[in-house]
Image (cartoon, rainbow, N blue to C red; front, side, top):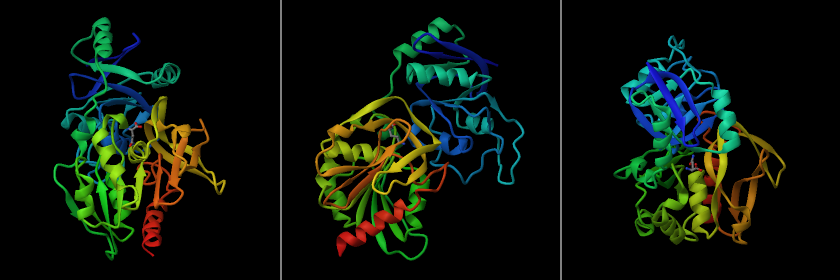
Length: 359
Ligand SMILES: NC(=O)CC[C@H](N)C(=O)O
């Protein structure tokens, strides 16, 4: 079945429907990871976005029940050059197309994803629409223009009720997790560090968090513009100086805003599994997994916050820490699902910070 991908600037691409039929709008972004399409599809940070995979063959090892980063696919739409109909892997349970179809996610294939990506790199991220129903490019461009990224994406992905998770081995620490769209693999990473977790809805207040008496608070990844969440930022601000704090990606941005700094939107973001990040104090470079469209403004950081990491591609802030309090955060994804495991140790680093600050 024919499908069209149309962008708000008037550009459009004809392709073939794959996954569910219908029509969907979203912010068009690209991801350069060669593997990990299942983790990308199910990462709640992609809520509201149409994701283009730049690697040309997607789906070749299929989909399994274990690698999801959340309960369902989160992307609004999925764009590929070619989806594989005959995946081959011992863990494979279904094809990517079956997965999208059964979860009602609209995909499009046979797209020149190289040309599309170059276009987004030049023009920046923008709203787009995929349709199998309306095949009139002019009307589709109009629909893309009229759409916008929702400001309530966190409410769509956060947990309804808090829940408890036990550490994989001996329980030694208790970490409160502010779930703004948390990826499963972040929870797994903490569980492997002897941490019990209480996962909390995004509207949990600072008082409620303190009542749990946790050893620290982890602020998770999440979708959309961090500034669309003033209530969350205000509650995190109240916890500065009260608990050890660690933020990843969206959590890093929320933490920066809570400390009085500012964030801004990047032109086309960082989404992929090989972004080089430099630790400014050791000079060591890590290859990191990333997925973000916003970043922290370096010059807006208060004096007590220092930049610890920078992206070697564009010199943007990738990590920060407080000079006196046990607070640090990174923009990249140490849990790396998908991606390299260079930065796994950061989960343990938070535990060490908790131990040190209690001593
Ligand atoms: N992975 C994330 O947490 C993404 C954070 C934020 N939504 C951004 O795009 O910058």
